[in-house]
Length: 394
Image 1: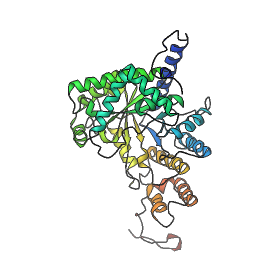
Image 2: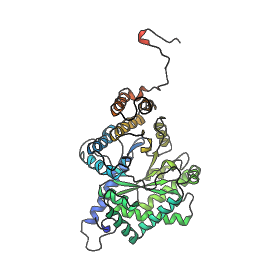
Image 3: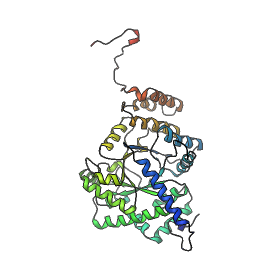
Image 4: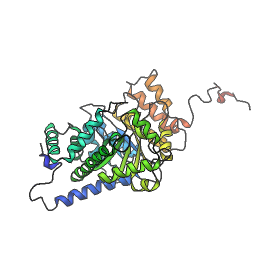
């Protein structure tokens, strides 16, 4: 295992003259690549992929999934939730460096808070202790040493997540920041303490050559309700505080807090200085992806992260890539918002979710027909056969 100083602490003696410059350049390159990818003429779309906790994956499936995210879905960034998937995706993306389309930035998003629907306030206190530990060199060293000893596929909280992202050469890492610790629903003292921890976190990621994307999370129903009551100025102040504290170029607002700011997520100057992303996590089968993306765009979000929660159930890696390809194309299309109805037949009807050949046939059919042909399955179901002379009167 590598020593803790390789991850969080500067070399105590005679560091190589090129070390700081290399780390600084790597961080700048990673941040610039992510920020460039997340901004566009219209809202950008990123796809989240997951291994559902599996320990072993077929390497060829991982490579094809990564390729589909780049070519089929044309995702702005590829967000990965599992270390076992992260390594293969990063390696596959780097195989097209210097080509067109080139590699997509890869962000690691570990599941540090469990993302339960309504967790107790305890995770917020735990996260605060983590942020405080990051500000304490000794605490960070001990935590990083434990994470390093655990091996490359293991995580040890925030420190383990940073170590995993750096080990597999991801562009950056998405880490949760509970709004309970900031200005929303928190005292000034707690907010200041959390921001100090964020500053230490920003420094740690820079030493590792990573960019950090803070994820604003509302852990309790009270804070979720408070998000809807904030105005543009209040939301802009929160985003500005987080940006200045950790030196980030992008901030993700989780699905639990996307109502932050009301009609606009933040004033225009704030949205210009920091790339604000919104998470889309909807129940699959109800054709809610595109409406939610459009709502985020209307409210001033620069990008949307399509969460793995929106994926069909029991889906494999290859079908995950094909689904995101179809879904992201649909979200960019001017045609129908309803493309999931055909897929619903596959998972809930007689085909079943355990027959990949039938699933792939349905995916291909939906794509070739223009993603359901801009029609709802319930429309024009009058049983007329125009080829045999049937017609409908005015």
